[in-house]
Amino acid sequence: MKGNAPERLVINWYNLVNHVYFSPDGLWVASSSFDKSVKLWNGATGEFVAAFRGHVRPVYQISWSADSRLLLSGSKDSTLKVWDIRTKMLKQDLPGHADEIFAVDWSPDGKKVTSGGKDWVLKLLMG
Image (cartoon, rainbow, N blue to C red; front, side, top):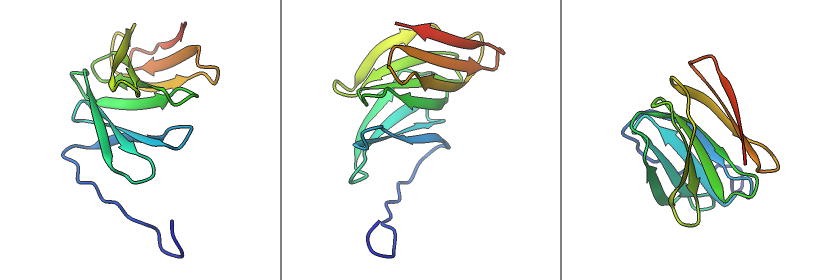
């Protein structure tokens, strides 16, 4: 924000946006949407950087690794995916759930991820 008035960057979307999240270092903003993608934006300018595609249903939730290098996504398609910000590619498919995934998070040490879903299961994945 500059002065008394906030700066605005309006980005038109074609589907509902489920989650937006600044990276811990503040360099990036990630968003997840019903368009089945995770999108990456420059955290300073708001410019679009990349779209991560691989989910086949809406993406509900995202979470950053503490070092801002990786992004975790959970989807209605019951999958968990890890995206590499440097290469702008899928790094890993993780064991998913039996139904939709509504919540994901990354441990502060970067060694574990957790997820929760419609299947009434909380998963803790290590390594």
